[in-house]
Length: 113
Image (cartoon, rainbow, N blue to C red; front, side, top):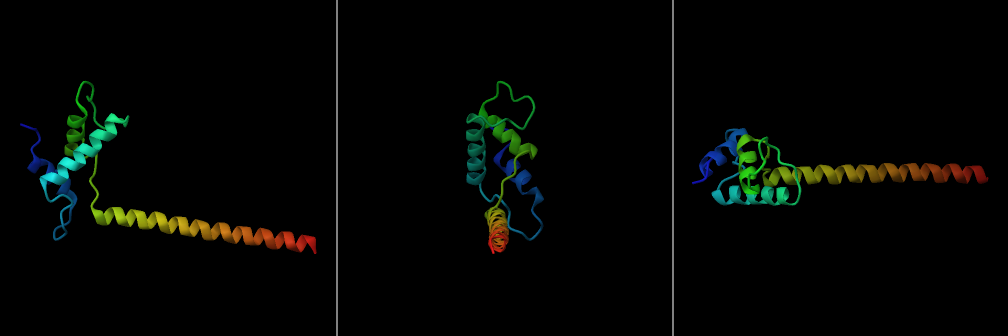
């Protein structure tokens, strides 16, 4: 039997959800996917976020990280918000670069005249 149980993991992951909001994790399947994804990251070389990870299997480390709150599962809305923020930042930076280039071109044109 796994410790912590699926229901314990779901409670921990959903503990930060405000009352009335939809829980981040609604099924055991979601917990399994999250733990498996983190285990693959650890296998690929990511550092474990818990102490005493030596001689533990990657899946055990991933489950322990989830249970201790070291790894957060983001809901779909959170992920989209983050992506939107990144895209907005990139757009603003492109506009700033375009303005700088335009000012430089104008300055060069005035020097030539």
